[in-house]
Image 1 (cartoon, rainbow, N blue to C red):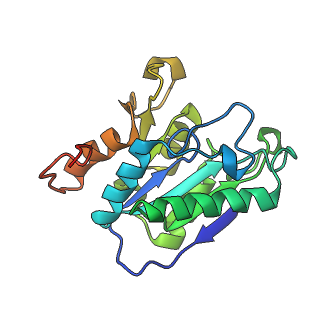
Image 2: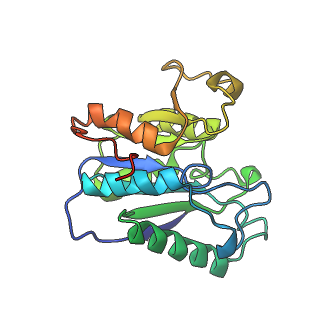
Image 3: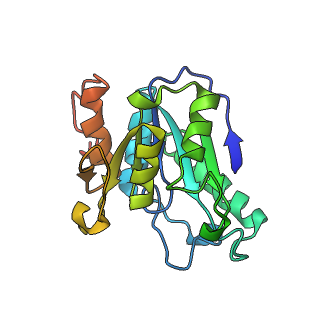
Length: 204
């Protein structure tokens, strides 16, 4: 497991866990290998700005098996990471930590989702009450990792594949589903008891 942390100059509460590829940025079947292949979803930048404005701490948990497959170099991983963090902060958002798993599935590590290792490590470091926390992801592995860790899993269904397509057998019933990150965050604002006096998606 690879961990990057940043000490904030503000007090985050509560916390939100996010997958990276497919949630914050566009995914690729051949992996995000270089900085120029990393493209933000506009709604993700909006959501991350709203989260920072409301003092919600964002932590990224991401499988990156391209590292151990020899597809992504370590230098390129950190170059992509630095570009992501800079782009988010430039847009008014923030990220307080990232947890990357470099392992291939056959390595049977404890951190690669659907295993809960990265989520539990984030909980230990940031003192997060997992039963009060959400993980938003776009794969069944994200939802199963959330369930294993004891937190709430939310499915980001950008391509309208439908939650049934994931063939989930989660004990807690079907996961919630939203079409983009901003929509999911606004829905969560109710459980966080954060009033939304205006729609942050509206153009001024």
